[in-house]
Image (cartoon, rainbow, N blue to C red; front, side, top):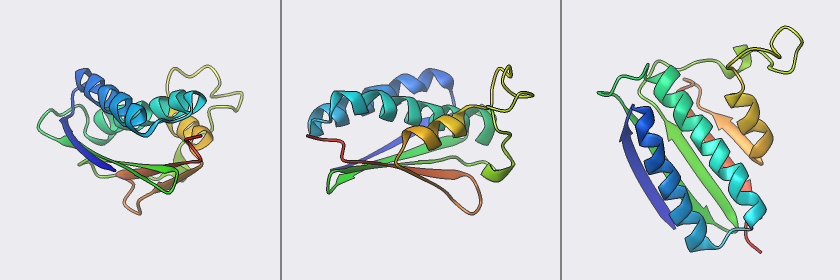
Length: 134
């Protein structure tokens, strides 16, 4: 199973991604406790791509690839921005960052997915969720 989505960089398009995740997870029959992890992770990745990667420029797109194989869901989110270095993102759990209003997306994705991989350029994240069906 593979699904490809391309959206303009508008936060209102997050509902398109949410609907796609609903369709995919229903189709493959994931465990209910995995649904929240998958949904939060992909929405964080797409929101980061829209806001930070593409600077909310509606002429730039976010590309989402969703694949399911061997009881693993692989989600790839790519923006058209210049990229970033995930190693330079401040740790949101340190005292000086704990009250920050943003900066938790990468942290959340890395805790919710079984594996997270950033492209060398930093404009693409791949998240893998294993053993998601009964």
